[in-house]
Length: 299
Image (cartoon, rainbow, N blue to C red; front, side, top):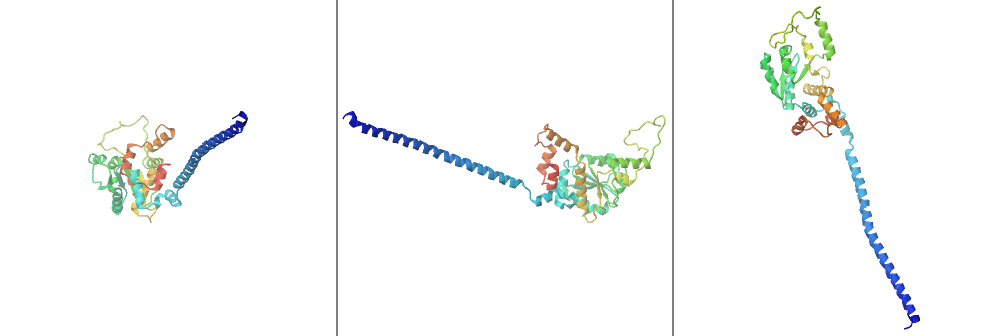
């Protein structure tokens, strides 16, 4: 066959080759599109899932009005269960609690109720001298009631300073700070200043009584750590008022280590999740705390 006769055939072969190449390109394009579409679909689903999870997290972190009210409640309005949990949490060292005041017998049942709520042991202070009473410094988790005639003497206070002292005040006395107490003391018992120094050297003996005038009982009870004023809220149960007063006093004057730890975490010198051994032990034995105390401690 001559070249002229084969020309149409050659032209037809080129057309078929072009069609095959186009079909191959379309097939490759279809494969690529098939590979890209699922990935795009997967990416779109991932974005939707991420946004949905973010919305769920935001909804979970949002607090209801009831939870906000529970955090902003006053300590005097808390339930007995919340008061028990918070007071037990704040007594992180399991220190003893000493009760003083003019009338301990009338409030003995309320003090025993406080001891039962805290799972503390109730004791009466029946010691007559400092050496025998000093054994209380070696025990923990005790609620100790000091009789009125004993609490106006000096030696029980040397033991009570190792714990938390609560003054049950049924008369509604005004609580004085340390400056006001010092002014009252100086007015009641002024001291004469010697021109050429003290008349006799200071005696630092433990057992020899010092020539110091007896203080007023109210002035001595003013030295307590907590002032439970029963006249301020007469409608409140005594046990609840005692626990609320303790919580309020501790939060108004927190231990120094809490402020130091918070400042160290802010500066970055202490890890943000670090906890003291007391905190670790308290969490292990804790039954929980109220939303109010949780907000205040984590502020």
